[in-house]
Image: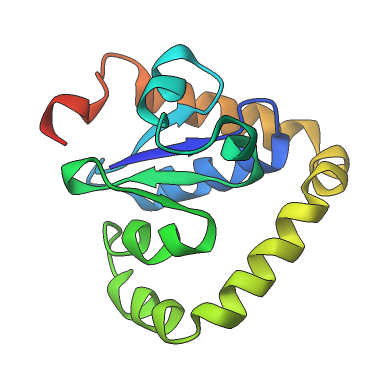
Amino acid sequence: MIVFYDGECGFCKVCVAVLLAWDRSRRLYPMTIQEPEGQHLLASVPEDERLDSAHVRGAGGTIFSGAVGAPHVLRQLPGGSPLATVVTIAMPLVQAAYRLVTSARPVIGSILPAAWCNWAEGRIAERRRGTTPPTSTL
């Protein structure tokens, strides 16, 4: 599963890196929305909406945006299925919380310690190193 994120957002990088740390089976592949392949794979998402939220590309190439993608990602993670069920049941609340957090992400990103952002960039780079995106299997 590909997780698309804003490559210029420190908060987004930290969130993706936390998911990658949880993803011991290496089922998630991080890709920035801005990179050419990200733009190509997100062609079904209107261009002016791509940076409004994170996106995930699931089996068959289906794109899930924002909070709707959370249960799909959680099901890929060890022990994440029960949380995915809770998130699915509480989706209206999760969507409201997601909108609140995404509207605040520039502020959140600006106050994150540089060490966190550096750790996140390293974690993401490590996952991508020597790995190709799973686009051929989706």
